[in-house]
Image 1: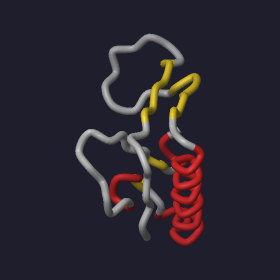
Image 2: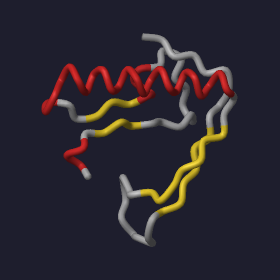
Image 3: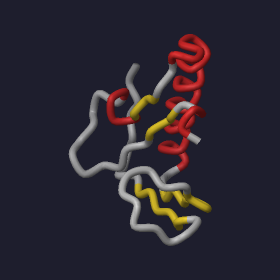
Image 4: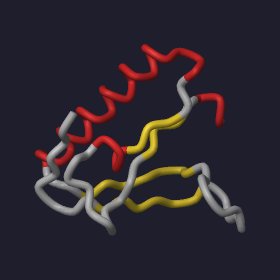
Length: 87
């Protein structure tokens, strides 16, 4: 599956609470600055991740945008769709 982004996507977020924790943090909100075309490509990835979740059931762990996009370049943001078992 190929996802084509026409520009660099920037993802920013605000932590729900201050923490020294490294790795995944619960975010109160996120903001994605991208073109309409990029948002549509992101939506394709989210739908694909939902399909994989359905197919794998309880065996689903996570899926990375960077692993699904053939044109991935260092420095672009990644998006992980993780299992609900992590929340």
